Length: 138
Image 1 (tube, rainbow, N blue to C red):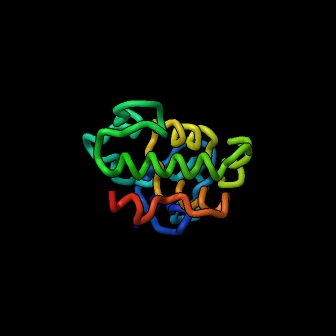
Image 2: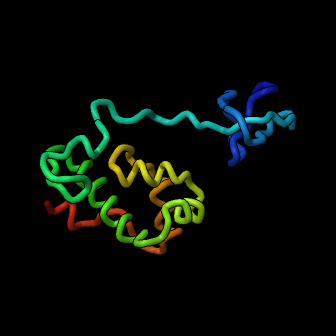
C-alpha cells in the first residue's frame, strides 16, 4: 500500500474512492473527510427497473412480463409492504439504517434492492422478505 491509500470501514485498503460527510482513515492514519464508496460491479446490463416489466395492472400486484428476477423483486415488494404495514416508511428506514428514499424506490419497483438493503430490512422488520422456493417453482 502506498501512503495515502484509503482504508474502508472494514480496514481493507483501497484506492482513494470517496465522497463527502464521513471520516475515513488512510494507511498513514491521516483522516480524510469523505464517505467510503466501494467499487462494486454495476447493475447487470440490459436489466431495467423491475416495475418496467409490468404487463398489466399496477405495481406490485399486476402481471409481469419479464425475467424471473423481476418476479423476485415483485414478491419482495409485496412482502416488504406487508411487513411495513401502517408504520411510517421513514421510521422503518431509520431502524434499518438506510435511506427512506431507497425504501420508497424499492417499493415502487424503481430500484433493485441490494443484499445489504435486504438484510437490513429483514432485521429491522424481524421477518423474511426474500422470496423462497414458491417463486422458483413458477
